[in-house]
Image 1: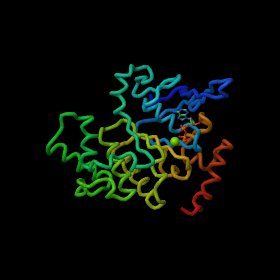
Image 2: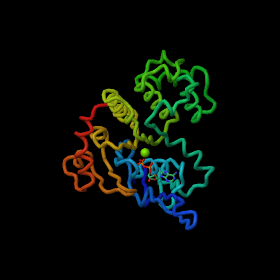
Image 3: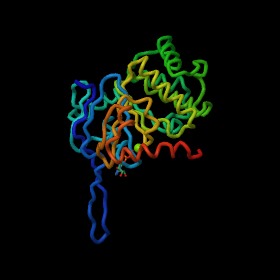
Image 4: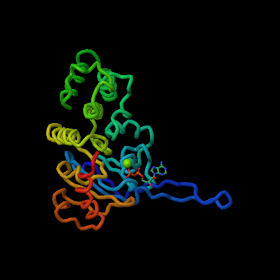
Length: 267
Ligand SMILES: Nc1ncnc2c1ncn2[C@@H]1O[C@H](COP(=O)(O)OP(=O)(O)O)[C@@H](O)[C@H]1O
Ligand SMILES: [Mg+2]
């Protein structure tokens, strides 16, 4: 049985269209029948151009948006069928890492407070040495010097801030981490450091992750499997190496062809 299984997931939005004289309602099928599965400890790359529905899919898996139809089965339990009060509790099992760590971290909270708050979500009664020890270990896990725990986000570089955001995502001991374009705003040299960190975390912690990107080149050495999404649907799925060596779908071929061009574009 897969760890997470998504079956025929649909997330639609309704949008007003037409004119004031003849109003109509348009349905946007942001996620339009997606099925996929993830094994425990696997990194799944979700790739597709901007607007194809990647973030909507991740927000639906997170249960921030309820699906229009379909199932999200984690560890044998269909999250789409749970009442909202139970969903709120389960949400702790899913943590996200976003593109812009500066926007996702509270600028008025030190690293210590940020991580302590996230740890307490899972362990409400924790404090003292136990809490301090966990904060220190989390910082070491993501390659940050624990001596910096009283500093604020603006005192760090972009790459270090993303490490703080990763530590915060790991703090509540999630079952699944969804990283939505986590390196897209970083310099290329920093990108590879963060990708290496995620690879190491998978090896050390057995992290299960969905890594979302519009850039197929980024996931080549990180993802075990890659799914390519286009207009709300999955158009190709395969082992990472096989997909790079023998893409079947025309859209995947286009994404592959775009990689060297992107790499040559000045920052
Ligand atoms: N809250 C929303 N209301 C209406 N339309 C939305 C909403 N969120 C996303 N969409 C639309 O759904 C489609 C997919 O968007 P998104 O999931 O953000 O794509 P991606 O993350 O791949 O760039 C887009 O057409 C977008 O405009
Ligand atoms: Mg997005």
